[in-house]
Image 1: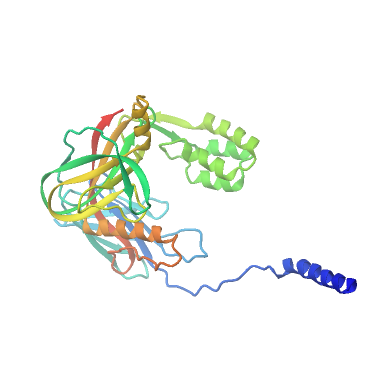
Image 2: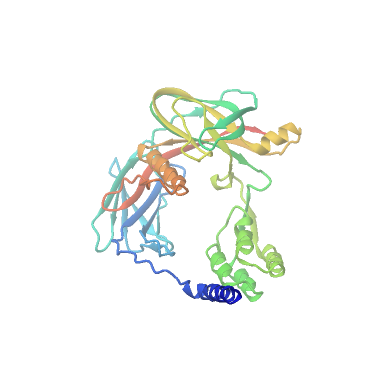
Amino acid sequence: MMKSVFKYLLVSFSVVLALPSCVKDMEIDVPGINREVVVSCLFNPQDKWELTLSETKNIQENEDIFIEDAIVEITSGTGEIITLNYSGEKGVYKSDDYPGMGKTYTLKVNIPGHEEITAESKVPGFVEVTVPDFEVKWVKYLNPNDLMDYDVFPLQVNFGETVQEARYLFRSCFFNPREGYKRYMLARESLEKLRTAGLPGKAYRELAKLVDQWLVSQWSFERILFNFVEDIYLRKTLNAILHRELKQKTIPTREYEAFGRSVCFGNDFWLNNVSYDVMTTMGEAENVTHAKLLYANANLKYSMEQNHSRDEEFWLEAIQASKDYIEYYRTYILQVSQRINPFSEPVIVHSNIHNATGIFAGFNRQMIYLFTY
């Protein structure tokens, strides 16, 4: 009996020792795919024309593939031709011209060895959005999409006219006057000082993508050290060098990129939040004169309870969108949300590009100031 038990234990131990040798990397055969051109251009009258051209890639590829040899032209409904020139980086083509309010534009892209790529879209005509006087009265709202409670207060926006074909997106925003006007830049020579001090290669490559660009927040640089420098003492040293080397300037105006985002829900029959997106409520309707919203900001709620002013500005963003824009945004959010559900079918993101994929869509944006607290 003892001999049998000993033999069983010996065999079991041998199996355990052999198990690690059974582990190996799995090779997955990815069938060859025909690469498609990807066009990305969401345009509005507040920003100069800018368009990005790239190629689709498979799941084994990490690097983006940009197109640098295209001829890009945009023609307005009045016949004006706008040429976008390659900026020299990341497939971005630019022009010093601005889109016009209420105008229709046709895109033409010609790439060697590829059929002509075309698309058409329009910047909606301007309809003024205003917020009548209101009182902040906090209530609880149960979001049916994520089954979570949110502290919100009702808010109504009025349109300057009856909108026959309304397509809108609304977002709660805030602006910190103490930080929102500041910009930060890391120069190339400063990056080299960080490398000399021991900056790891991965962190160096990530920071190199931000070199010589004025950014809104120091955290854009700090987060790279936090994510890619494991040694705490080295990270502390590099942070000190980074703070010493960052160039800083102050600008006179509020820029869109400096606004923070909070939570916003629809409180009207034609508005809803798509899937798990609690930041944007959106909808389409005919012959509407107003929209009812639920505005949320947890920090604001807490500050009001404590009677402690944050000295922050609170705003509402109202985007009047073309049909392609709103359909693109809706399907994009659905695709991202469905990734966590293993039983869902993939959602195809809306595209209005002929002979390629991507989006070419117009919109206009209004920022409505609410109050400071």
